[in-house]
Length: 203
Length: 168
Ligand SMILES: [Zn+2]
Image (cartoon, rainbow over all chains, first blue to last red; front, side):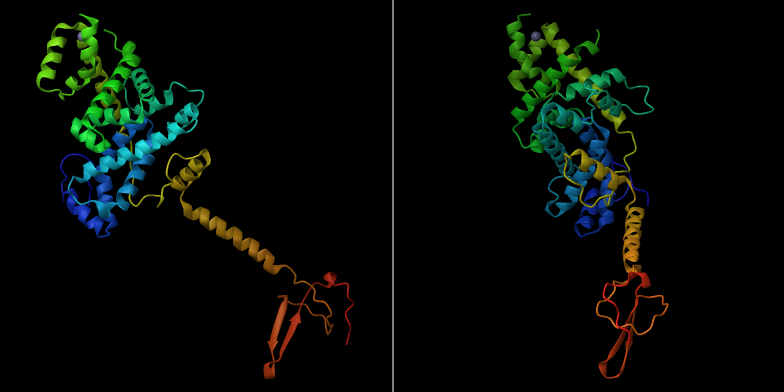
């Protein structure tokens, strides 16, 4: 049986059928959900972390947590919505812990940057696909470095808006905050990126 | 344009770009942007940054994600952030097949135990020497009648205890 990968309408049973099976202890059913949703989940993690290996690990970690709390999933929201919340929280936890360790070193370490690579060049190369001629590497480098200067909460809001295309209300629910907070986080995040990336947009 | 006006409008530009501004507030901001080159540039910058971010993530996520799997390679992935050593152990256990490693460890333990077992038995004290023989094993136990037992304890001839055996 071929399983579909993430996004779009499933060709076979909808998510809730697999969720119900997984809740009864069918590990293969949960495997189907992982295959379906891992790309979307990974995109959120990559956006928040800017580093491939860490994003891979934390996406896996999010699925572990989802499986462990599957009994609490009552189907009021879509599985993808519920999972997105878990992924976001796993990444936020990670970034907050990284922040509380020795400021610069841990932050770089958490994001996989070498000490002699303070500008996060390696981070940008993770955004760059090996066979991509399209992606402008220099801009990618600058974006990731600029993202690294945002607070975890600002990053989360920006990723949920730009990558996931959520409304402010949906972002507020995902991050457990008010819509006004979402608005101001996005404002400060974009303002900062605009200043840091200004030179890359020559007009 | 009056910079004071831009200052009051600016915090709402991001929400305008996201179509999350409504009613009178939206009217005010739209009215300002229509006549303000600076704020239009800001909106354009926001758009470009968003597009570049989406493009980067899109391209970045085209890589192979089969490492994200179920069941996970490690039943309980350690909670990040990891120390360098935890990271190393985690990576090794994630990417290295554990069975050859476990088999190697088992072989090593078997070897150590084996060497210990085939070591010559310690020489008994206060023994009585009956006869010297060549034998494979260090101890022979021969059950006799009435619950009696004969134990023959073998040891190397050059591993004699200080106590001189008493020949019968
Ligand atoms: Zn203006």
